[in-house]
Length: 300
Image 1 (cartoon, rainbow, N blue to C red):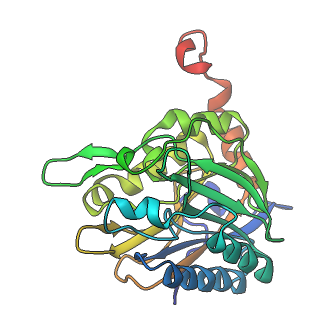
Image 2 (tube, rainbow, N blue to C red):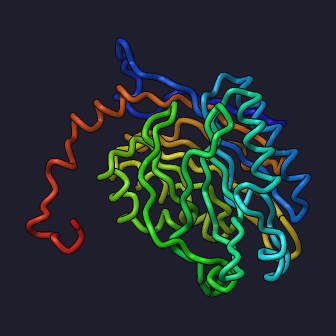
Image 3 (cartoon, rainbow, N blue to C red):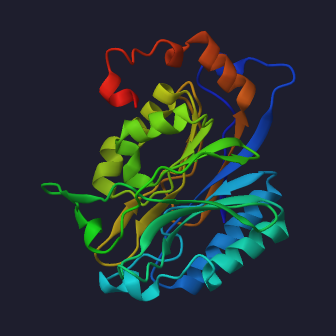
């Protein structure tokens, strides 16, 4: 188990010692998932325990932490309901370690036959407190790059989930490809989100080009913390993920990240400072400067 830690660095604002700051540690996780759900579960439980030992109040695990399919039919075959054995074990690990958990899983959907791509939040008492189902399907055909058609194996969600109160702040939920749609991040900020999370399994070509840029952009424009757990490495003969799990602060500085030179399970721990967030928002009050009279079609 590798561990990485970065303190709040990068911007002058982030170095200010704010008295009485509301500060909490969050852990972001990275590992290379496979088809074997039991092996992935063991990795997730170990990461949860490691995060708790490091003093984190919440740990963020990647998209599809339960399994990475090798064939299209395996998504439906292996998906479990949220009250199934995989999530029961995650809930027990959260309770045993007194830590909150965000985790991406395939959620069984018996009507369509295709699972949801789901981000589930579990409290430190082991209670499932919030669920988001991915809105945007990753259907792409990039020349000399990834060719994916998520909509053929996944049922898309149909609503934005309200931010949920957690130890790290009001948490807005999204998943991976959702980070390319700023309107979702803006809507979550409008609903009072202080932190956005994007559990992910980014492809290597798109990750190298866009991953950090997108995460920092979402953090800057919404003035929220952004936490993006990630898969890394070769899952099977057809699929690899970029990794680089990170935490970004509201000023756009990367305050914690996992190593990209190893596919071993890893966590990075960073500080979530809500006083610093408030200062960013008061110093540059973007959301009071919005012009819904001009951009009314985007303001609803």
